[in-house]
Amino acid sequence: MGLARARARDVIIDSAPILAWRRADPDAAIGHAPAHHPRTLLRGYRLHTLLCRGTSLPLLFLLFLLSRANVHDAPFARPLLELAVRLFTLRPCVIRLDAGYWGLKLIAWIHTVLRAQAVIPWNPKRQKRRDGLAPTWTAEELGKRTGIERFFGRVLVFFRLQRPPVFGWSAVETRVALTYAAVWVISLAAWQAARPDLIRSPRLVLAHV
Image (tube, rainbow, N blue to C red; front, top):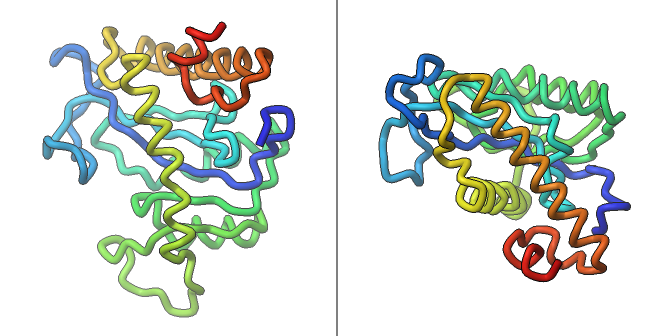
């Protein structure tokens, strides 16, 4: 899908850890690391992102939320979606979320207010009862959420966002905004150079341009 035709009808919400640059960072906190991470606990923040699955790009550099690492993911999905609807008149058909965002109220809101399908694995630790709730995911549909994991893999390493050399809430938030803006600049450069195949390849775009 080209950038000019991207309408974010299929979106993904997920979070990634950002490690604190200094242990003395006053705004960082200690929280559980993702399952695939080599450490059990991490000190820092969590970055919540709304991604267009068609382009594998964040919806501009405005649509992210930052939290301390010890805060649960669940409360951040609805504010991200509400912001997208308000700013960009977003009307997604499918919303894919990680199990950490599981919640009956959120799923009901997505279905009834946004008129979208929620693709989210059931988290039995957070919700024991599922009476009357239709299935929200299949293995095939859930597999389509990997685009955001690849996105985080690119920005965390290439732009040094995994552990940015800044500390304090405002500095980290600014760093994320600048990083996401750079992601869009690189993607637009690839599009202008008639190389849409490179919009997700920062090294190749810079070399080509």
